[in-house]
Length: 356
Ligand SMILES: [Zn+2]
Image 1: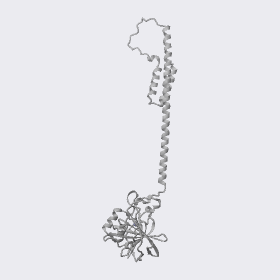
Image 2: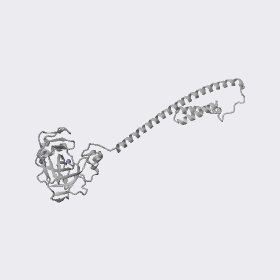
Image 3: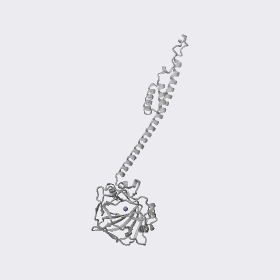
Image 4: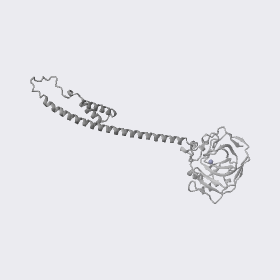
């Protein structure tokens, strides 16, 4: 009996060591502990003050009644061992269930960790991959300060040191040769491209600067003017973009201030497409000469496109004399594009020449 109980106690201690919080294991251990106590301990001790038993004793029941307790102790032992076995089985079952649950939890945690690692690796790969975004604007996240981060091909917007526009000041006054214009009434199409109103002009309109001939490709509008002269801009500007057969770009800027209606602008406004990115091709013609001021004095410097990809090597010519557009014509554009101008860029020691 003692051996059996001791074994059970050991099992319970071992089992409950793995699950200190298991109330059933604790109860089983308690039960085992109580039955393993010496028999004498289970008999209430006689109070110390109690008088000795009377000397006179009944006759000892001797051997005959002794047989009966022995038999009942055996029964109790059997019952107890069955109970212990039952408890042990239940405990093992619970232990196994707990172990299985712990294994499941470990497996789940491991799967989650792997998933998180894979997600982090994918994010890192995405961050490291070259970006080829196409969405840019004049404000906020996709604004001029971030253009170079949107697309790897737009790096010059951030790192270039010959960027446009600039504040034109301290120009070297020289006898600049006149730009030779060979513009004609031409067919055209126009689009609201999400950044400006752009007017594509039919072929056959040329300028000659130095010995290079450039053909007019398109013109478009900014509000306010991108370029400044001695720190001052105007309400709007027209950029006339030309390209040589070798692919060199020359842009003429004509500043616009409030005043009389602008004839060419009115024709463009009259034919505005209803939807962004729709290209309309009216059946009338325009004369790009209407975009030029009377006086042809100008500033010139080497710069860049003022929108992504900010390509450098662009020959800029900015007329000193502004043209005029009416407040209503200005207001119409500002409803579409209240702000579509890149801020001025560092001159970075570039030479600026201007007509005497
Ligand atoms: Zn422009």
